[in-house]
Length: 337
Image 1 (spheres, helix red, strand yellow):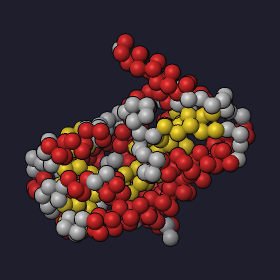
Image 2 (cartoon, rainbow, N blue to C red; image 1 turned 45 degrees about the horizontal axis):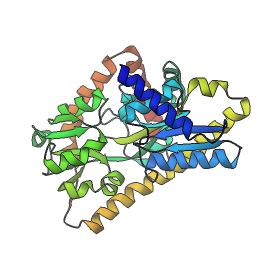
Image 3 (tube, rainbow, N blue to C red; image 1 turned 90 degrees about the horizontal axis):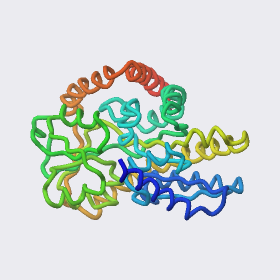
Image 4 (cartoon, one colour; image 1 turned 60 degrees about the horizontal axis):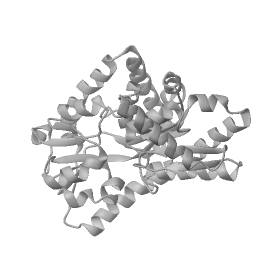
């Protein structure tokens, strides 16, 4: 506990030392500057600085510790804004695991965009839940369809029996998902992933293609498989006390900046997926890319039902979220163009 307090004090000193003025807002996120969360953060920063006298200080992944450290700092008010993948947030805000539950969100990008813009879960239910955790939810957005990279090809849950698959730490649903898929899930930070692949500590992992290509994960495995089980999603939120104390004009500025950044990343995320797989095909022509057929996906979908039921059974709040998200997705399927 004393070490944890000391670490927080050191981080607070780092942040204070880089402050430019009282009008400088600090924003940390869990990826690099050119990654989706970085693209969102830079679009947010540009809008704020072009339309006000405020400045935004950006802290990319690793600058202020791991994902859990950034969350602590945001809740404590040391950070004004935080960008974080929904997969990491399940430990803090269990309802956020709904975005990790397999075979819930669609793979169709138009349906996905409509959902994130119009969902009652995203725009009404989750903001109220975030308030209880001292945060103001400003956006949730997709970064790309999940792809699974492995050393050996798989076509069914039976093929994954006993395979050690890295999953993001902090999300019980990710562990349950790969258990349901037949594998042995291994929660592990991003910083440990590459070394684990190189040494054979794990047999595979999942990420969007933009991450797989950018960080050379295709060079460390032999097969990339699209199972259609989900997307990698991220959120952006503000410290609630900070947000509540803003004047009407600045609140509107922050919300408009979030809307601008959201529109930017929805357009860019689709490009990044295509760019990632395109580069893998060009630079690693011997790498095997597999798209499971609908028939091959069916056993995974059946296995996923247990995970969906598990999420809904964890709390009354989870149950309401799952029921509403199904209604939201039905509307997205009906209205997306």
